[in-house]
Every structure is written in C-alpha cells, then in structure tokens.
Length: 311
Image (cartoon, rainbow, N blue to C red; front, top):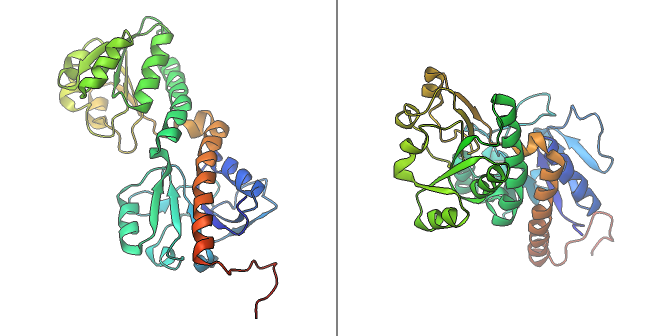
C-alpha cells in the first residue's frame, strides 16, 4: 500500500491512466495536472493547475514517458494549455522528492542538478525496457505492414542496434520470415546474432548492409543513419526509427532522397497503451514503495491528515 504518499501526475497519454488507476488502488494521494480534458474523471484524485499545487507537500512527481521537451514543456493529451516544469516549483518540494520520467533528457538533467531532486528514468530499467520492447516491436511491425507494398516474409530487413528493443525486433521479424541483418558495434552482440541464425554486421559496414534493404529499423539513440549511409540505401527503403528524439536518422537527407522515414519513439503508448501503462505502473509501485519507506524514516512521527493531532 502507498497510504501516506502524496504523488503528482503531470501530463502524459493513455498510459498514465493505467498508472493512476493502480496508484488509487494502493491508496496514494494523487494530484493530477494537465488532465482537464479527461472525460472520465477519477473520483479519488484531485485535478489542479500547476500554479495551484502545494509542491511542499508532494513526495513524488510522475512525468510522461517522454519527460519534457528541451524547454521544460510536458506533453499531455488531456491538457487545455501548455504545462511547464519550472525549477522554482520543483525546488519547493521536500528534498527527498523524486521525479519519475520515462527518460532523462538534458533539461531534466539540468533540473536535477539545480534543484537537488533526483530524476529516475524508469524506461532505462532493464525489466521495464525488455517488457516494453514487445509493444514497441508490435508497433514497428504495424508500421512496416502499413507503409510497404511487400510482405514481412521474405523482406530484406536491417536492424541497427542489438539492445533490448533491437533483440526483440530481430527475433520478431525473423519469426515472420524476414531476411534479417543486425548491425552492432559490439563483438559479443555479433556472436549472439550469428548464434540466432541471423546475419551479423559490424557497425563499420552499415553502408554495405543497407544497400538492398526493404525495411530498416534503428534502435540506436545516436546519428547512425547518416547522409553517407542513406546515400547507399534504395529509395524504396522504409525506415522506422525507434530511438528517443531526435532519433538516429538524418531525416532531412532521407526526405531529399525520397526515402520514407518515421521517427516513432512512443509506439507503446499508441498501439498498446493499456499494456504499456501496466508495465510502467508495476515498476513505479516498486519505486514508490521504496520512497515511502524513506519518507517514513525521515518523518517517523508524521501524522496523516485524518489521524489524531499530536501535542
């Protein structure tokens, strides 16, 4: 149970609704910011505007999977107006307050440094990322089917990166009969790729790997599909970039060459928000339980609002 923990949920998409449901079940006290347009309000959570929240009482803040943009704006499908995560507001929270975000971008890193409040990137946890790779790859399959005129079976598919998403993508596309090449800069990855009966490609040879690609899936959060690489790629190739913004593709040059390229970092929230929300909620409950224990140790005589007054 999370009784006694004050949590602010700021912005987000349908995944946040699953998180909110779970936290209400566990008796956390919730403040919702950026949910004015939500048709079905939660009975046991208070909707507030950013400036009206008593941040000095907030123990934890839950941000969307994408965190904020570079200016501190928090994306929300249910908000009437823009929401900004300001340093002066976060600085009002208790020193033990934790901000939970899917990723930790430069703005959040700077906010963490200036306020001393920890930012926890939940999507970077192995357990969350591995589970989250399933709806991510299902979404990639959907995009590939919708945006190509060939079957996945028999397609020449290049997957760049062999991390948690890359491995799931390689397995899924191969299972559907694609001829899969996997690009990695790690020798141990190349050995595992070969063991899986897929074609391993060293990162230095990525240009050669994409020369006959029908589908190219990037999972690396760095510029790997450069203009030089794209110049060797057929114009028919469909690129799905699953890396966090700004992705790993030179989208300007791809457009110039007539290559269709999609930046799709939030597929779980689009194709399977309920499942993706439950994955995030499971991890957040564990993290919030630890936070509640720390809070109780710091405030052993803290009384609940509905408890008895102390002398």
